[in-house]
Length: 392
Ligand SMILES: *Cc1c(COP(=O)(O)O)cnc(C)c1O
Image (tube, rainbow, N blue to C red; front, side, top):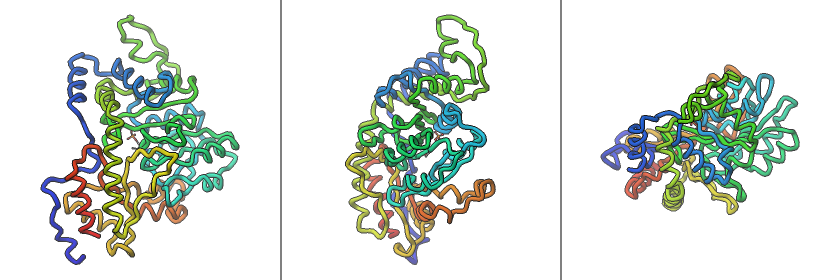
């Protein structure tokens, strides 16, 4: 390991982490959208909503396209009636947007540590932090592996809590035959560039209750009583009323133009990621790293992230040295995630310390995500494996 600073690249160009697979159909559709003169929320968004609802086996009146998963989480909080004085339980092993959405609603986030094997929020830990102020649970299906939803729903029923699923990693995820995002009261999805299906920026919210989704559509467009599609359709001008103080969270047709073609390849993309996943499991199995836990028989994993845990005692190299070693070799990597209490803002505001959530802290300090995208060629995958082996 003495020559760690002098590693040669395993390839000429840098392999960008999480680069999406974009087809000619997306490009053509974006061009026709531009030529149509209708760039904003319109027929392509409506199409994307119908396609997504069909994929999730829900009626299309129960979904709303928005401009991010963060927006979806935020308006789910509001529709769930969550506000100041309320507590929402979530995981310390997530992207900051999950926790920020709770804070933006005025509620207080409460963390429950993860199961070190699945990296998902632990139902026992949830029970341990419930108080009379708890109003909701916000589980994150980490890396695409479903949370223990039976246990979580039982806890929610027992305490009268709402469940908002953060499905940013979990578009294809299923738990015991149920699709992620349809198990709790709300499901929030992301189509950010690194996610399994992309629209550039984009999101979708799915609600069990029709009243909730109707309110969210209003919240997502300034609080206006009729959305722009209805207002500007060829049915003629309609006056609108502002019925509450909403947000600017609507998706554009330009974004949906990408999404409707991505949705057609959702199955083949997942198959390709599963293939890469299996290759990594096979080729990296002899190394002194912890690989992802096996996938349960009664679950569909979305294969969003492939994580390695680098324990410097066993690897002779720290996680951060591994990160720079991969970068030096022209392989892009990611960290998902440093645990939420590692960030200064949450420490200052809530007094959280990483040590209070030891499983998330340990994983957060050891984890590395290696590329797992349908866009990867066999050579790309080989390069990643070679680069990792060079370091370990
Ligand atoms: C990406 C991500 C989000 C935010 O998604 P955006 O669409 O970028 O707002 C939220 N939660 C998790 C777990 C994520 O990975």
